Image 1: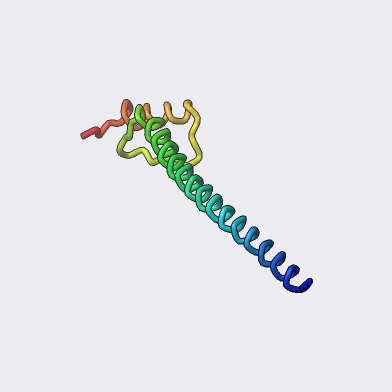
Image 2: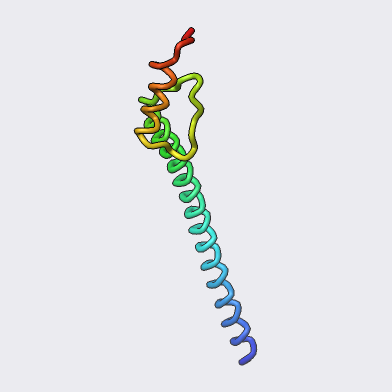
Length: 90
């Protein structure tokens, strides 16, 4: 009779653990979905900020882009040499 009681106790513990695991899995799924939504929001927001940051930029043909972020003096010099001092402007 003692073994039957012990078996029932173990079954009850397993049932409780199964319920806990189901709750944890549900919570994990909710958190995973939330992370994906947050990642999408961050990607969209970052893209918008990058586009807004370039909104007032001007592209000048003949002046190559510089990935090293030129100083304002270098950019001004390039502008003057390319636009203002260019003799063969179409």
